[in-house]
Image (cartoon, one colour):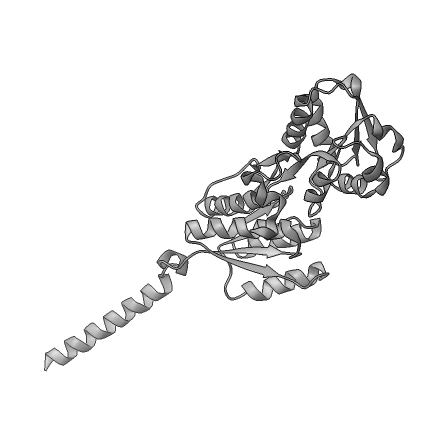
Length: 305
């Protein structure tokens, strides 16, 4: 008669043990389920974003990480974006959050969500003090690279640099000065508008991103400016046209590398690594002579990939 009682007691003990184990069981990621990294896009258009996503997806596949893309409707407000992410993560938060360039309010609110779910936040392309890590381009190094490419031409033409006076532009300007080492022949023009185009016929010009496109678009420049006089920073989807028609060289961002490194850094954050300093993604100077080389095809013609 004692045997059934013993079996019953044993069953109860096993049930209690299973309940305790259930409450203390590890999270799904620790049980062999792939970690989930969320790449949240406030704008999903253009070849820059396309390449960034490709780089992130490649790195995620190599690490065995599930990369989920979260996008919001074009023109959505910050509140709408945050609500979209909040609803998506309330019951199933990601292991890490990757945030491409956005406005300061979105960066702050995204950091609050990351803290709520104890998910590391990796900021891409810009400084975010609230992020656990940042992966971006080094503006001073970019300026130095473009300056070295200009210096390699061996021209004695005075250089006029157009800048918008932002911190990004100032860092690039410092890099240019460092590489060129001829301050007496450099004229800096600061402002958001472009004046005094006539001297461009006799000056080699290096400018910051938006100003590169603005200068190039002027039909006056395209018709009257000697080829190779205009040098600048990545104007976005117009980069190939700029090099075909007038530009002597462009410092081009590598968003594929940015996305790839961001996933690698996120993996480090999840593992407990600390990133007190930014992780820099590479940039490259491309000229009309090098734009069709194999290593530059993806940069210049991403839609062909």
